[in-house]
Length: 291
Length: 273
Image (cartoon, rainbow over the protein chains, first blue to last red):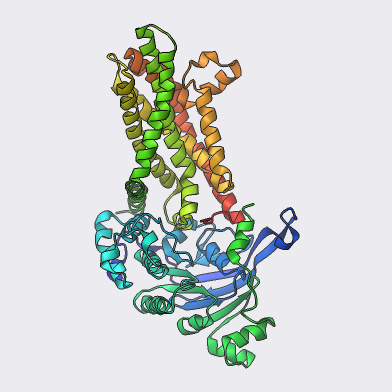
């Protein structure tokens, strides 16, 4: 898979090898949102999406942040990928500040979100080539790299030219993973990459994430609400609850700390609530700020 | 290669990527584009036929029809540039790709200029088809027309249009729901004050003052003179366009940066499809 990396981007020169892959200190983000139950004309109130979140991720580590919808996972991923500006605290990626050195960060990071997010009328190959141009990959390079990376995620060669709108969710998500890896990121942000996938596609994507870790020099931050996925893929697991990171430890330490058998039980012990009970939709919360 | 040279190369590849993407999309939406072209021709015919209804001599009718056609063609050209620029953000938000584009290591200038470059190419092709199709349909004679001068002035004016377009492209970033419509308001106002079908001198004085800062004023005036009378490019039309081009792009970019920062602070840089 190493041959897929864009030769034009010298990522190594941008890395501070002494610095942690991710270093987040007292990170805060608050949105103003309307209480839906109070009606359309109710005043907006501050809604803390992230409250003094602090953690570090070592280079090459895979860390899972667990949390329900609305817990702040996507906000954290957006902040780290320079799509949001925090209200306080700081976040550094390989020693670079995400706000002040955004252009450097953008060369180091890529992301896979719950929505595959492609130009629907364009094919998988066209979408990947388009994304690769932003990272300096020329048509000559993508003519080789795109079929190679699509092959590595198990994408059927005969469907490369088909519009994305004709592909299943599982297929689209594989193309999304291929897009992220095509640019050889040193930090991969996975925001619920398997949500909504059928069990087989889910396993395939998880297997591919394992391969990426094994063969790629990538650090992975996996945000998910799938506890099993977190347990199988991550070195350490944290729970983000209503914007607060309750802990970030190896799964065995979490279970020992709360004296429980499963992560679901640990969530209950840490928050006093069942993991499945809350149904807030994080996306809808964001859309409130559009009004 | 030095780090600076690598970065420059990467940005140029990125600019090519924006143009290439629009070529892919134009191919995929070809039938839609064809229908839009037919609509634009029909719309232009309704304007140019006014010359026939004016009851003028054959020569005067031909001159009026040519002037109206030049105005309608430039309106259509500008419309394309403003549509592409204003909807830079809106399209990506609708497609869901906005976050991936804005987190990519492409400078905003290159991103927006790439969009503008394709808009100019696409707009010029459409403008040429529109002009010659309607001229043939109505039977307009322009034996003196200096097409080279008209084309060169339009190309020069395009730099200013892209700069102004960058300013309007920020609107959907600030207001995802109403921004695109506000962009069309800006386009309409610019053309209304620029003498699209009439001389600027017929407007109230305050509108004439606004016309002075609109690049469309100089493109319309110069192109009309080139097509109707065969005039070359006049310096009086070039220098205002150059000044506007030099000022509009950095101002547009600065405005966009402020808008982007606002969107990032308030969580508006997000898909809505």
